[in-house]
Length: 145
Image (cartoon, rainbow, N blue to C red; front, side, top):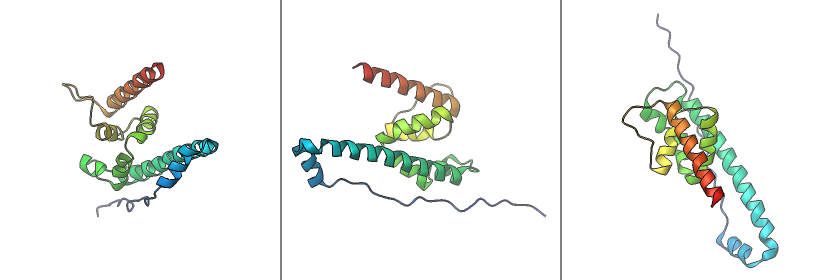
């Protein structure tokens, strides 16, 4: 009798929205006393973004752990939401692939619209190393300017 292991049902993280009303942003620009509030909002958004990233990443990993199909890995709802985070997610993705090289590197290709293509196929680990190296070089350029 064959023995089948069924994967757990997919995990989906509910969407949330963090928005600053237009009138709030105008008020912050007009009042120098409220500049500290902007710093608090920036910090909150940073913490929120990292937490959202971590939750989506863990859910995506859980859903695709036993998956070998590339299309199913990138079609996962949590992967799409990671990509939807856009440019602000890049440092978080770089940090993660620097520690643990994974197919998460594909999100960078999608977000930036570029890839480190060569005439030969490269491994996921090599692609992650190239992205991390690129990020460090870009960060150095930005901090010098």
